[in-house]
Image (cartoon, rainbow, N blue to C red; front, side, top):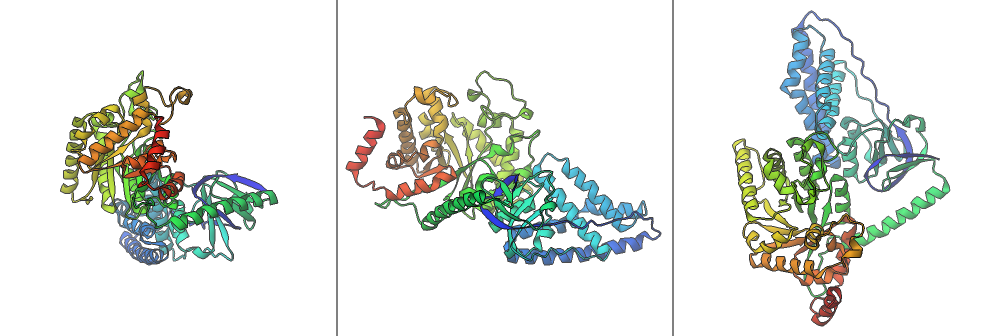
Length: 557
C-alpha cells in the first residue's frame, strides 16, 4: 500500500482506478516571416475559430454543471480579446516579423509570468487560464485537435493539474475523484470538484502519479489522503468511516428543508460560523440557514502583502453565490490581538487584545478598509450579503463607518458598478461598552451579533488563551448571561434582530435559556449545526415551570 497526503478541497470517500492525465505538449518554432499582414490574417481567423470553440464549450459546461463553472470559458474569450494581449501579438508579428504561433506563445508567457508574480492568489491562479486559452489558439493555427481524455471505467483522475478545457470534456459520470500534484482552493479542479460533489485532493507534491496509472485506489477526502492498493485493514476503516458519514447524512436529510421550530411553535434560524472557503462546503453540507459569521481575515493572514480588491471580491462573491440566496454575514477585517500579519506594520503593543485592532484599525487605515468595502458591496449584487463591524465601543465609530460606506457607494455608482440595494449593516456586541450603549447602537444599525467569546474575556477580565481559564471562572457566568438579555431587550425595543455567534451558542445546556431570552438566531461551527437544530426542535418553551427550573439550574440560583 502506498499512502500519499495532500490537501482536501471536497470531503468524501471515493474508490476507483487511477487514470493519469498526461497533457500533450504543443511545439512552437520561432520563424521569421515576410508578410505580416498575411500572418495577422492567420491569427485573426484562428482567434475567431478559438472563440467559437469556447462558446460551444461554455454552453456544454453550463448544461452539465451550471452557469457559474461555465463562466471560466467566457474569461478565456475575454483573454483572447484583451487589448494588451492583442497588442503583444501584433507587435511581435509586425515589428519583429515573427510567426503567429510564436507571437501567441511569447505573449501568453509574458502575461502569465506577470500574473504569477501578483500578490493575489486568485490572479496567480488565472495565469493557467492565459496558457489554456493561448494553447487553444495555437492549436487552431496549427490545425491540431485537442487530446481527448477517454475513461473506460470509474476513475480517480490524477494529474499535475487540470485546465478548464481538459475537465470540460471529461465524462463526468465516470469521475470518482480528482487528485493533483499542484493546485489551490481557487484552482479550476477544486472548483469543479465542489460543483460535482466529489472528493478532491490538491498539493500532493513532487510525486510521480503516472507510476500508479491503472492501479486501484481509495481517496479519503476527510483526512486528505489517497491510499493506492490499500490493505484490508485500511479498506475496513474507510468503510466504517463511510457508514458513519452516511448516518449523519441520513439525519441531515430528515432535517433538510425543515424549519427549526420548537414544539410550541417558536422558530429560530441556525447559521454557520466559518473562517474561510474551506469551511463553506461543511456549512452547506450541514444545511446551515446561512452564514452568520464569515471571519474575513483569512484572506489577509499567512501572506506577505495585502490582497487586492479583485481577490476579495472573487472570494466574497463565491460565498454569496454558493449560499444560493441564503443570508451571508461577513465581518470586516479583525486584524490585531492574536491575528497578525507583518506587512500591516502594526506597532508592538503590551496588550494587543486591547489595542489597535478591528474597527479601530480600519478607521485609521481607511485605504485598507475602503478596498474591503468595495469588494463586499460588489459581491452584494450576487445574493443576500450583510456587513458586520467588530469591536465597536462607541456610536461615533458607527457614524464614521457609515460615512465611509456612503463614499464607497458613490464611487461605485459613478463607475456604474452594481451592488445590492438592501445591504444590512450590523455591529458585533463583544465589549461591555457595546452592551451598555446597545440601546443607542440599535438606532443606527440593522442588526446585532453577540460575540460571546470576546464578551466573556472583556467582562470577566481574563485572557481566553490562559490555560487556567476554566479553573478560575465558572462557565456561563451570570454577568455574561445578563448582558445578553440586556442587549436582546434593547435591540427588540428598536425593532432589530440579534444573533448569538460565539461558542456559547453551541452549548446545548444553554439552548433553552438562550431561546427564552428571545434571541432571534444562533450561529455555530458547521459540525455543531445539526445537534443545535435537534435541540431546538425538542424544546417546549411554553412549559414555563420546566423552563424556569432549567434556567435556575444553569444560572446557579
